[in-house]
Image 1 (cartoon, rainbow, N blue to C red):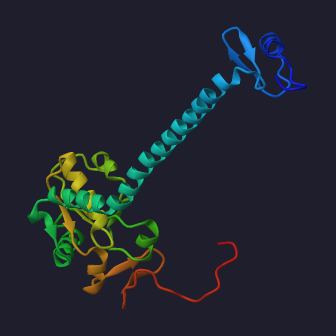
Image 2 (image 1 turned 120 degrees about the vertical axis):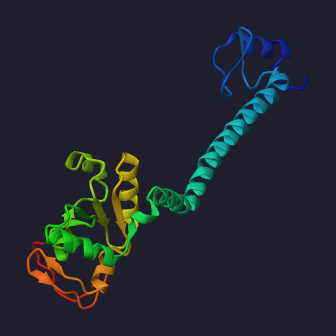
Length: 231
């Protein structure tokens, strides 16, 4: 024992009998508390540090693996959503019989028959209210593209003749495919939609102006003007 060093038996007694460790946190061994200044440290300190290190590493690894698993499907969804939509669109179009896919001229002829009272066909425009108000086919019905579920209440007969169009044909394809899933048998999809109608020079009506003719179609006209302050 070096000069000035506390005897071993006293150090051991102090470690096992006192509750407070003057040098820091206590560790529990059996029923005794062993402080960091105790001789027993050489037997327990390294295992304790190792256990804490392993616990930390396992916890870190689990967090990393969870984050990785969470990120993988997100990345997959981001890359597959467009192809998924295209696949669903193709499936919806397969539901529509080929002889029920018509062009603009076919719709114009049917519209003339309706106007003349020779046909009871239902003509549905799926565009938004703003699109419809700006220019639509006279006496056509404006129904939201997401409201196919309302059709059985309005026209419950599955043999009802229905002609459907939108701006081009994307929304209409989903809508018509859904009606065939419902059990309708006489629904027509109009390709090219209102754009094809305008390109043919067929008549339109504006909710506020009456009959109009579109000289040049633009999806969204860009203008320079001052908006109303209360708009």
